[in-house]
Amino acid sequence: MTTLYFTPIFKAPSNHKYDAVDFFSIDPMFGDEAALRRLIAELDKRGMGLILDAVLNHVNFRNPWFLAAQRGEAPYRDWFSFDAEGQHQCWWGNDYLAELNLENEALQDVLFKGKDSFLAHYLDMGIQGWRFDTAQDLGQKTARRIRAAIQPRFPEAQLLGELMSYAGGWLDGSGYTGLMNYYFREALLAWLSGEIAHPQANLAMRDYYEGYGHEGALNSWLMLSSHDTMRLRNAMPELALRQLAIAAQFTLPGIPLIYYGEENGMQGGNDPDCRRAMVWDEAAWEVPMRETVRQMIALRQRLPALQTGRLL
Image 1 (cartoon, rainbow, N blue to C red):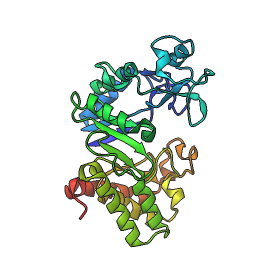
Image 2 (image 1 turned 90 degrees about the vertical axis):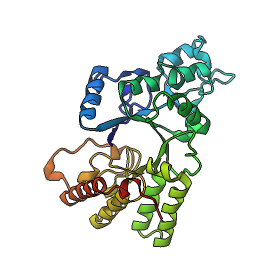
Image 3 (image 1 turned 45 degrees about the vertical axis):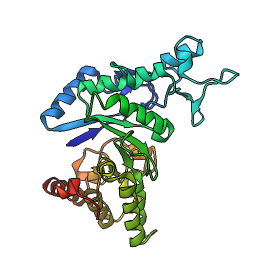
């Protein structure tokens, strides 16, 4: 199934929305729940799905849960961690991002265990699954808890973890169903830039395939760029090499993920420059790259081996 992936769309004060103040409200910047339901319905008519971004590790310090926790109110005080001086635990030293205490069972019920939990609310609405931000911070225990809570009700739901490095051992069938395969990206770009030789690149691809397992590899996203990395055109200016990267992305085990604009050769350096607004001016599009992507999509759709085949 062809699928759209959205970075966070829930109410938050930032432009990136990785700091929610309300998981159960769509940010007005994007619309409202009625608009989301219409989108899901229209995608379904086209045989397409939608994956949303779940940021379960932290919230904005203006989140009502955190404000209540600062006042010492139950049950919210135990949804966060405070030291003896009353300072909250924050994500990577960012005071405005208060880390959630995912060991708290009441919070687990709100986020993923309960019948009307955050994750279940939107799965009930018809989304195809979730991508989990900072999967390494959530940990494997939380991943297993999420899978155990969600899979009985939504057996087809995709649960993908964001891991920026090699992730062998994370896909044991009890946690995430797939991963964002940045390891593939790093190995492929290193090979195409001449940093590693052909045998090393082959071994790296076999590493991820064997480490993730066949089903895990097939359910993982093959990344060449994202909102967290330099765009492909900036990382590799030569068109022929980028076309070869696209060919590998569509023929190795996994799900090709095209970051918006990459099909047109959009440019952008490291974050946040890689998050430029979409270029809609067709005169600025890189036509050969767009045609390569179109050809590879058609080839993958035509050949089942490229969708489910094994790496021999």
